[in-house]
Amino acid sequence: MSKIKPIILLAGLSDDLNTKFENILAAHDFRTTILDNSSDILEEIKKDYPELMIMDYNARGMDSLDIARSLKSNSKTKRIPILMLIDTEKPVQTERGIEAGCDDFLSYNVEEQELLTRIKTFIKINTYRLLLDEKEKFEEILNEISDGVIVLRPDWSIEKYNRNAVNLINLSSQSVGADFIEHCRENFSITKNLYDYIDSPEKELTFELIREDKTSVNPLFILVKCNFIKSPFGKNLRIILTLRNITESKIEEMLKQDFLSLISHKLRTPIVALTYSMRLVMKRHELNYSEEELDGFIANAYKKSKEVNELIEKLLVFSTVVNDKMFMKLEPIEIGQAIRENVEIYTSSRSKESSKTVEVEYLFPEESKEKVIFSGEYLKIILENLLDNGIKFNDKETARITIKIIKENENHFQVSITDNGPGIPHEEFENIFKKFYQVERYFTGAIEGIGIGLSLIKHILNTYDCQIWVESKIGKGSTFHFTLPAFKDAV
Ligand code: ADP
Image 1 (cartoon, protein in one colour):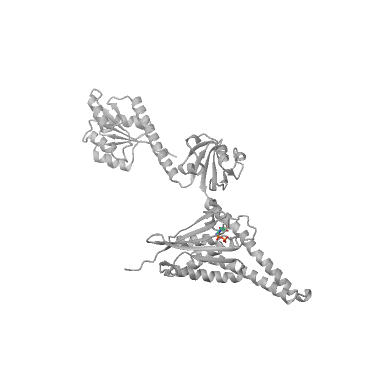
Image 2 (cartoon, rainbow, N blue to C red):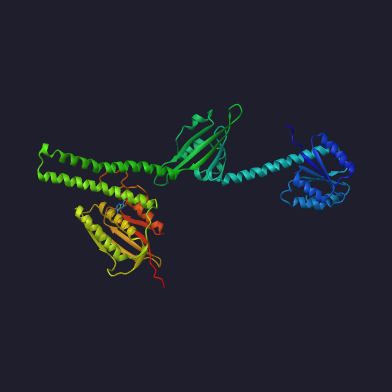
């Protein structure tokens, strides 16, 4: 393959000098282009970017200082070194040359050796400059990458990293030279024994860094992909790591797994009881059950099948609402009236099924005509779920529920539902609004529910820029506050 020869531009030189330089340069593998008017120079530079330019101070037919200035002020041409031929007896020429941006000066009778040394030095410096530019660009790109990137030396010590890596695994300026594995072991558990891979012949490796869910810090899962850069003899030269924060998808995955076992458990409990009751009914002749006993089995089977039905119903509503498949019409609703109606319907149907007494107190006037703009169907879901929680988690014989409405501001009403239940620990205030989350994590199945009610409510309210939050004291009870958009009559 023929090597591309560097181009040297000879601008405005006398014929003698052109011949002299051309001969010297050709003998040392340079190409030369001879130019003697300024418009040609600019054209030539655009066409065939030269490595260097030699220009005569006293150029024929052109203003060499002007050309130097215009090349140096243009971002595309300013990197081209300009060597100016001057009369060394006249320091003013050097001064003006410097002012115009020339990089170096040669005398008219410059020796071959000196000419070559100067040219080669400038070409080398320029190459380094370009490399530095590229390096800066590379570092800029590295910092723009949304993944963390870390470069390790073959002994796994840290050589370089980008901004996102700093945030992900908490690197500092002292981390350069530190042992990557040790650094990670201090903060994370690592899913592979990295010491096994120090001299590994592998080309790629994937592992995870996991920071457990502790009360003081949130969980963090980082997926790390390693690419081993090898010498032709198989030795590791560098290890490039890309780090990606996969916490959200990990938690989602864990929740799904929890959810499946939770659902199977929650469904199995009533179905086992239902099957058992029905089996007894089927054996009624053989086992000679009394009418009364049979009624008991059938009533129990009915109760359990209702439980299964309710559970499935809840799941269906949840998946339709959360997947935005339910389009609700927003309408002006008299909020006090609507709350009273929904609560009455809910508590009276509940009182038929459960022995627990429920007392509801309304802390707003019966005749209140304040209006919100919301979906009646969604309001029903929100109220039912909050009441259900206030009653089913309640450890008292009589569940006392208080409901308050206040006008928070011009745009929103705030509804607060208070119970006298067991309360919720402070550190769970955010968690309970997450999907499939139940405070009683290692649930026994004794308490109904699957941990979707609050996340469903939050999803609905957030869709309409409304909020929900909780205040609670252990042993005293909980208050759930939520906002609803105020209806404004057209004026
Ligand atoms: P579910 O009721 O199906 O368990 P939720 O999403 O409605 O799910 O509630 C999540 C968790 O928050 C419940 O499992 C419970 O531990 C806690 N919780 C919700 N409301 C109350 C309440 N009023 N009193 C005590 N704990 C509650």
